[in-house]
Length: 462
Image 1 (cartoon, rainbow, N blue to C red):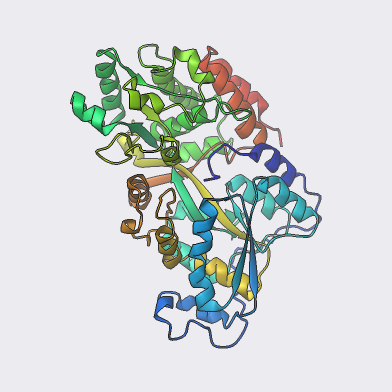
Image 2 (image 1 turned 60 degrees about the vertical axis):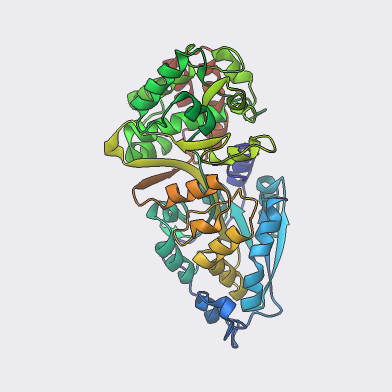
């Protein structure tokens, strides 16, 4: 899933911000009116179209086509395209899917050239804001807004809203607040999954006493080296300081070197910079910086470490044949909170559906993607797993992967306090620049104060 940080977002956000387009985004705070093509909709009387009656308002769309531009490539692309077949059956409109590994950069090129797609799947809220700033994005129709109100939390709708106008409904999602472990290894040693942060540290001490390193980690990722460590800090800030403080930090309403951030980074340091705890299977603390993030958790399978903090998409990194399940070779548990007063924080990511046209077929497709019907169609079309949504109408039983089911249950938990990946919302010079670099320097010996001071000094003045 492209919402992970292994991407070209740094250049993309800078490029979009540099768009020299004269028009301005709308200040209208309401969703756009729905457009209709006229005629009876093809889904009339079709039992397969039950639950999609909203699409009747758009009329018969036969002969029309909606173009999609996205960073989601094969093999994930096939499941997406299959999930659109019901839309075509019920409306008559076709969907033209185009994926690109240069999505962010090429989207900018197309916008500047006046060749915008009908719809783009935007993987970062910060990128959505800059795209809206181009003046080309179209506010979501009321039907989409109503669906998001029904099926998603307020946090998710907020990430699709820019300057009071709702533009983009959520699409897919991922959960980053996970710790991977081996249920078989835990059962063999009598270890219990921790429920609090203190329990997790106590378990770490217990494991370390056996001669096994309790933690393994890797933050090397080419030009993006350091991003897994930023996730650690973001999770810690959410847990220790709370969601409101997290939002203020992300928006630079509190400085990056504030004492609350420093306390949270030291909380992380108690694990990642602790020679007794890391780096199982690889070496000392410094080895974290040179260990590829894809390899970071693999020593768990060899019994060389016991825990690895990484997102739900890490499921794809386990070798073929690994039993990823509640009682198997590898699974994950929710990263415990440090402060019960801050609820159940969940760090994650996802994509958002932005439109550049208000034609009836485009609005109809936006509406379809925001329904519980599409979420379940997409789950059924992904039998191999690796996809989940925060849509509360998603039937978890339609997800085949145990880790996807766990992710969905966390996202649907009414006590969950979801926050989008912080660095994806920060200015690219920080979020995809100094934040990555200074966390790497911090792992290899730089002090907490120096690392945070350096990031703070890099924050753009405007």
